Amino acid sequence: MSGFPILSLMLAVPLLAALACLFLEAKAARSLALVATLVDFALGVVLWLNFDIGGAQWQFTERLEIFSGFSWALGIDGIALLLIMLSVFLMPICIGASWNSIEKRVGEYMAAFLLVETLMIGVFAAQDIYLFYMFFEAGLIPMYLIIGIWGGADRIYASYKFFLYTLLGSVLMLVAMLWMVHTAGTTDVPTLMAYDFDPKVQTWLWLAFFASFAVKMPMWPVHTWLPAAHVQAPTAGSVILAGVLLKMGGYGFIRFSLPMFPEASAYFAPLVWGLSMAAVVITSLIALVQSDMKKLIAYSSVAHMAIVTIGLFAFNVQGLEGSMLVMLSHGLVSGALFLCVGVIYDRLHTREITRYGGLAINMPRYALFFLLFTMASIGLPGTSGFVGEFLSLGGIYQASTWAALICTTGIILGAAYMLYLYRRVAFGDQKNADAAAMPDLDLRELLMVVPLGLAVLWMGVYPESFIAPMRADIAALDARLARAKPAGDSTPTIGKAKPAHEQAAAHEGSH
Image (cartoon, rainbow, N blue to C red; front, side):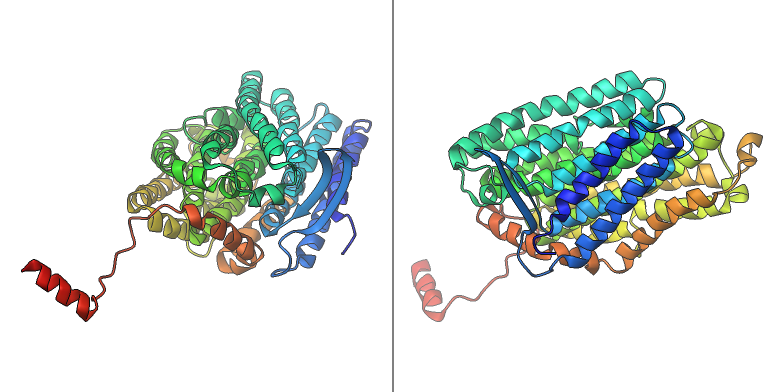
């Protein structure tokens, strides 16, 4: 693969297909979008198979100087590889989820989704800081359109809130980037990751980036745009929003905040821990009282992403690896849960939990997959959710026992609201005849949920296949952070016997 611009090709395929979809009728646009996303997934598999684990940190690099201070620079490490694979894996499923539910402006809808795919891959592959910013911000536009045109009754309010929250947070980041490039004399991200900025200035730079990434995650209390966006977005919009777009915030912390500003990251770690602990408990309690299935899963996303942020700022390998696995698992599981909501919404056109009940009787296949994804969300051993949360909590415990305790209560609350949801939807009496008459999953829907179920089990049973590509990159990041690592409260200090001459001196001093 040396010299072949596979990353540029992965960006070009959905972009060209998006342009073509604008001029096609509905049926042709659907088919082209599906083919384009499957081609990109196949290219992603090629990327995965040719990635040299243990080789150079940055692979598949491409660089074309466009003008002074800006380059078309692409390349990936193991962390970016995993997030790109998550993106290209979910996109064909999103197209399948929209096959029958989207009936107006189908060509424009498919074009918007294909553009989202291009921009997501660009965020994870960009090695020029300005190129990263362009991809990062441009992703707002198609998602704004997807929510605002094809969303629910309050779609305009939700789309504006989504756009304004995420845009305003990123203005400060752009100012910080301009200063960094001026100071370091380069726009190259790998070079900036190794550059030692003045610790006094790091504080301001960190806050500028935090303003953007915290909204994107989203962290409490700047999370309020997420439930509105999820509720109003079409099913596929919710899948890709929860599955990939939220992960851009976590990726930003890993790629920029932590390696570029290690001292500031250590200084602000207690702030991140405090906000994350509050998010775990508060949003879990809010999820418990929701009557709308989408809102419940949206609030659970905030709680899960809070475990990611606190694990990232635990400053150890377990916390960093666990956070990455939680992001990957959450991308699969939350996307699958939103898909499960979409399946029954397409039949009954309501997300109210009370309108369902006893679906295990007339929809046994649906109930089985919904149970699998519910258990994965809870963190059942053998599913993807367990591996990431176990590693994250291990890393968090090393940094703060109190933080680990509070995060663990959040997991218990997570089990409460997810099992409560499942019981009310799948079990109990069938009180509503229309819900009792709904047909089970058809072939198209099975083709969407089966790959997700297999991926969830694969990560839970054999997590090494996901840890191996990023192990060296996480170790390099941990080494970079070592100089600023704050002291944890959970490692006991083991007493050591003093040498004999020191004991004698101490004894004489006491007299």
